[in-house]
Length: 220
Image 1 (tube, rainbow, N blue to C red):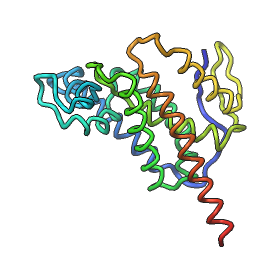
Image 2 (cartoon, rainbow, N blue to C red):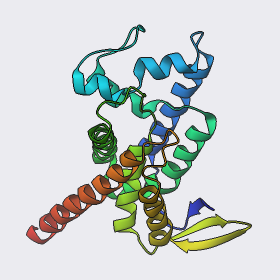
Image 3 (cartoon, rainbow, N blue to C red):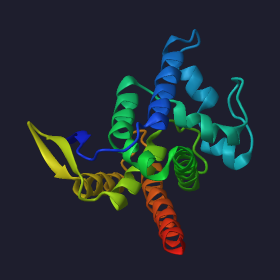
Image 4 (cartoon, helix red, strand yellow):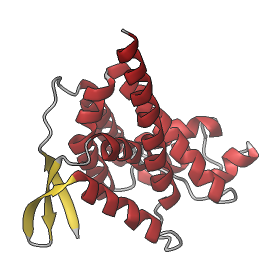
């Protein structure tokens, strides 16, 4: 068991967008739990149901938003406090450096593209599923993939059983990715393919941007 606590990788700018995304997720979760209709109502109303998206129809009696739009709204829904806390912890630790590298506007695009792409990959492997997909995990997995490429040697203070140790980012994130792959087929209500897809999308996007950045630098 390992739980990252913080990285030793300073940034030049305050991570405004990372804080905004975390705040939005918290506010949406508070709305979910304090809404008169309850937590499950919001999940089935705004969660991404693969069957609905692949068949462009709705299967619940609840007032639903457009199925394709749920790919976006589902990124801000969570099923429990632990679900929310785990996602926001990873985003806070690793998101600030990716925002610092990309800049605020590009980070927003990166985050959304990672999340939407991860959702589509989950749907590709579960086209007939009628279980709502929710959570920021796919988008955050993209952040982890980018961090894995950009800062593999950065030290991350991590709880490992009863110890707190500085561990290289490539090891923590590599183990995280391997765990997602090994858990395929286990189920448990976790969108493993979204995690894997988001991570690989993040790797690809950051490599493309880094290459363009180097080209612009040499052209100056």
